[in-house]
Image (tube, rainbow over all chains, first blue to last red; front, side):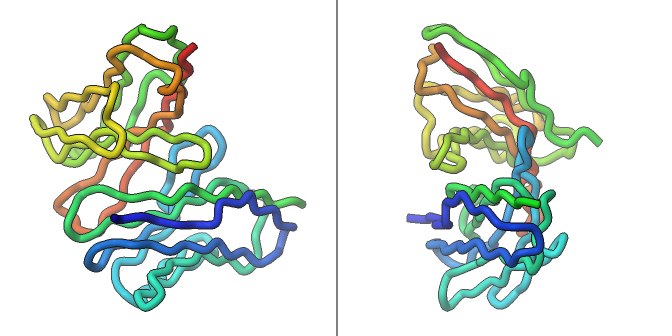
Length: 112
Length: 114
């Protein structure tokens, strides 16, 4: 069935460190891929998305590339800030349905 | 621009009590859904709707009912609360006519069942 696997963390980094959060998926067809971010006490907000193979989504210094051959959508940022501390969710929606499938979330803590 | 509004923000129930979690959106989105968020399990889909008068079950529907009488509102009813329903509940919506549109989330309801 459809699923999303991502490293659960928690991930703890120092400010200005490089961030990678791995995400792989299984889905039918050619899904759209998303990264959401959840700050403490809030709902999920869209961070970036990619809708076809080799697309790169980017926002606020974060990037992720849709890799169809490895069914992956890893999230990267070159220099994290304390304000990036949050939980990050990878998700997909396949082209045959309306529902999204989410990964378990990765908690990121950035220390000053 | 309110987006997706959930009420209440916090709720404590005793086992066996019933209650309704409210969700409203002002973006004229056809699709609405309810998720629960539990530690280590991410978000799991409870129920969803693709338009007024249409609802369907998600991954974990047992113990919950929904209805969709209007485009704007999608309430979630707990019929007889159990401690296993202690969770954070999120409502989300999206326009079905836009193929790659993301979900828009409310700020959640934190429910504790004692």
